[in-house]
Length: 218
Image (cartoon, rainbow, N blue to C red):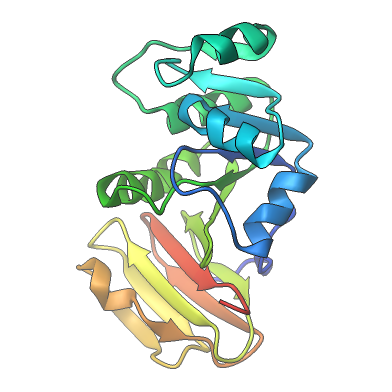
């Protein structure tokens, strides 16, 4: 299980998707909103973005959550996808992939209904096979991994590892609770860990996992 080049604390991805969860308030996700070179809104997130004083470059989804006024005002950037088998976040990610985006930051995907939050977080592992993606919340950042990886960190940073494939074998190094050759068969088993230094490594033999790292001033 060889480590890879360290994944940055927060990677500066400039393609941003704003989902219809809790609108960001922490300085880290808010900074990504302002630095976005392309800002895609899931349709239900448009009204909060406009109230905040910003405008989207594109609006993607089934468009059942926006007013007629917004439809008319932004008809030039609407991308209608009526498919009810996938959610608006996945439609937005696919729109980015279709437009050759290689790195995506997702904001506003948690903090509302818990079932929506869990669904959105778990989808990161599905996106990871096609694009580099990170989900930034008001508390930290989620990154999906499909192979062993090393992560930038800092002493005392709160870290959680969630295995989406219960038979995956993990080696966790430079964490307060290390692990060698063990599975994480339930989500809680890899949660509430802590970095010991400026990096830590997650070794895995196969499968999918999600890594959460809190913001430095969370």
